[in-house]
Length: 140
Image 1 (cartoon, rainbow, N blue to C red):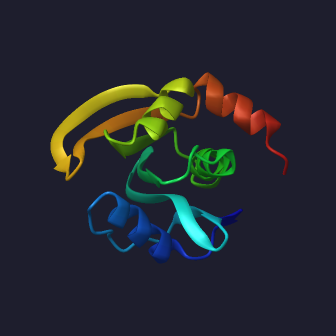
Image 2 (cartoon, rainbow, N blue to C red):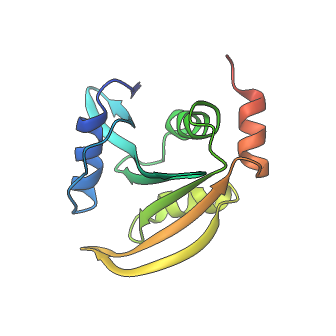
């Protein structure tokens, strides 16, 4: 089990394939593999002044905590952004539940975006309690 940090396009392509989509060309993505096989990932696109879109897919039993931590740290500390908008297939109930549990706000539903259903947009701000606790506990 390990984070994949050096193969952004491969991770983005895998995430998009799980969503029944085609990934754009990306510079940043974080994956999570088990026994050399990708099981979860996040790719980043649509960067604007204070926001980035995080496209998420997961085929593991649980969404990997290390991937979640790395995503929040990357967005808040590395990119210096105030918010991340997570785009999630409504069929991926595990990721939706995790985002809700982190305190992410459900901002919108885009109907019939994916083959499996709708795209749910959740927003997590760097100033929200969960990211702040996570960043305080992050080992540098």
